[in-house]
Image (cartoon, rainbow, N blue to C red; front, top):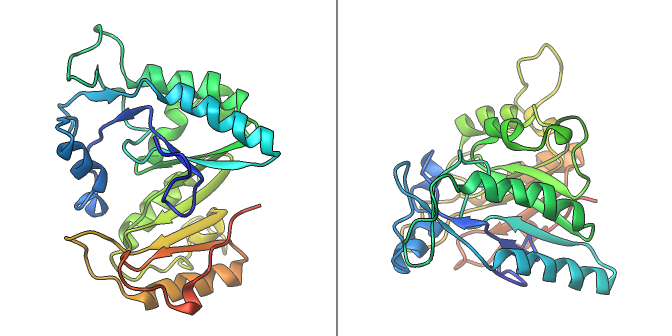
Length: 263
C-alpha cells in the first residue's frame, strides 16, 4: 500500500492482491510486473496465482478515518499492482503458499465492494482497469442502476485503437468515468465520433482525463504535442485534464502543468 502516494493524481493506492496479465501494448514495460519480480513474486500471467494482501483492509479503514477527521475527501487508486476487474484468480500468501481451494481474487473484490465502499464516504475510489467489458459482470447488481457516488470507473487507452475500444466499453457503465492515458504511445483523437448515430465523440463519454508518457529505462518516445491536443480537446468539452509527466526526467512544459480534478 502507499499512503500519500507518489502518484500525483491520487492521495493513496490500495491493492487487494498483487499480480495481473498483460493485455495490450501499454503493458509492455509494466512497472508493477518488474516490481513483483524484483521481490521474487511469480504472480503474472493467466496461469499464475495472485498474492493476497492482508494489510489492505486496515489501510483502507485508516484512510477513511484520517479523511473524516480532516473533513476532507481523499482519492484512492485501486490498484497499482493489480486489475480489479480481472477474472477471479487463485491466491497465494507472501511465501507463495496457496490458500484453500476455492478462495480467489473474486472474493476479495466482493468484500471490497460490499463492505469497504459503503463504509468509506470520505474516500473516492478510482477503479482503473484495462478490462472495462468486465465491470458490469463483477460489480454488485445494485451498482448497475445505482452506482456509488464515491466510485469512479476508469480505463487505460494508450493509442487510437485502444481508445476507441476501451472508451466505448467503459461508456456502458453507469457512474462517473475517467481515462488514464498513460503511457500514451501515439497521437490520440478523443474528438472522433462514436458510431451511434449521434454527434457524440469519445471525450463526451468520460468525466476526467489523466495523461502522460512512460518512465523507466525502457521508456518509449512521447511527443508533448500529443498531450497538447488532448489538453485543448478537454478545454473545449470542459472536461478536467490532469497532465502527469513527460517521462519523470524531463521537466513538464509550463503550458502542460495542468492538474485539474473532477468535482
